[in-house]
Amino acid sequence: MTLPRRRYFLHLAAGAAALPAMSRIARAQAYPSRPVRIIVGFPAGSGPDIIARLIGQGFSERLGQQFVIENRPGAAGNIATEIVVKAPSDGYTLLMVVSTNTINATLYTNLNFNFIRDIAPVASIAGTSYGLLVNQSFPVKTVPEFIAYAKTNPGKINMASAGSGSGPHVVGELFKMMTGIDLVHVPYRGSYWPDLLSGQVQVAFAPMPSSTGYIQAGTLRALAVTGATRSEALPNIPTVGEFVPRYEALVGTGSVRPKTHQRRSSTSSTMRSTRSLLILLSRRGCLLWELSRGR
Picture 1 (tube, rainbow, N blue to C red):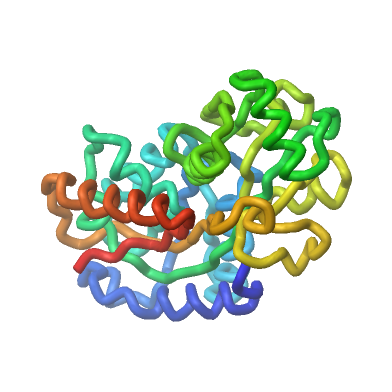
Picture 2 (cartoon, rainbow, N blue to C red; picture 1 turned 60 degrees about the horizontal axis):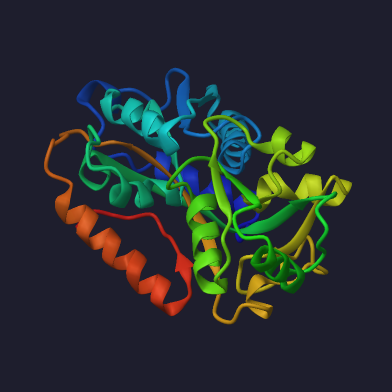
């Protein structure tokens, strides 16, 4: 992750102090006057969940109220997003946003919300890369070996993700496109870690916050990280870009709340702009998602 833990808290503290669109009743009180929910659209132990719990603990210590982490996985984070969109716009329901929220605008045409118009950004929190992880029994130890093995065994390697359109899925698809290999995508509603550890699926592109423990314990093998530079925590692991020129993938994490005046407008313009961004970045061989802000 690119920001140290102390700066996570400073970023969100500044965001919490700058909620101008809160209701009159909420503004008349000292915020927060009751527990705050942080909704996470992914299972416990996932990267967004780990970051949310660190932030929630820091917020609770600083502001004297509970910040409760609520995991609502499913539909690549859309279930959690809709919960927040429909919540009162009083600053007491926040959403842990990841790159998937942007990607979803290009994949789902029947969403009951417009991501850009129905929510307001509070703070940008962190950016992190993914780890290209394989089960320890998988017979490759480097990225070139993995590519060669996949090309001689097309359609026989299962790639786990947190759901269709999730960050791990899109990062894996970019890797497939740039290397010309065929991996079978296996989307999960819940955690894919048990199946990856047991070998039911062989590979996953997983966010580094949730990957590092498995790598350090030796229960999973990291072939590479997807950032432009090596991880400070795991400096001996190469980047994918060292073997696949121009490959880079990062995930952004932020916090948002529902806007005071929600508008059920068409998502077509949002979808067109996000799709254009995806195509542009794919042509460059680079995938870098950031929290979108409506203008």
